[in-house]
Image: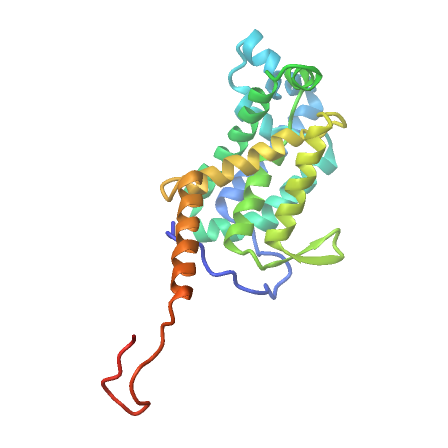
Length: 249
């Protein structure tokens, strides 16, 4: 993996990112297979979906992984897999399949753990999360969206297939929507807290080994202080324009 994000290249001139890469092909295949099985045996959704009450009450410790392979309906899996293909293919080409798979599962499991932790909050919000069932790859896909926005921040994304906006603003918008939605409760069948968990897990994973959040804030503050100090002093070129021995004063 490269130590710095590639420069935000500009436009992609082909329709879509190209054919499925190996890791994404494996993920899509597993999701489709699990979806078809759930149509025949609906009970597996209750057994393998994410439900904090079952993790602690029945020790279903596999749920933070298995939940991301199950989907509620055809449109649920279609949009998740479509987003995975659109935004994940280029990341897998950049990172390699092994790193991409690791990142995908880190985001998915991180999203699940966020939901589990928040389910212990006091009040109605925590209680609803504790007993609610969460399924779908959305948490992992949100992590993919975040990585895409960091690596290709100025790539245009057509919101609602009409309005082109840079990827960095698109992710900021959907993150804000999920945050506001989660504050009003986990209703509507959409686990907004899981979406936020996927974003957070992806951000922390990409930042690991570089600098943690507080160090990054300190770094940018010191950089700002140095820049401000330089502006206080006039730095200019001395000597004549044709003097080969000119020095900076």
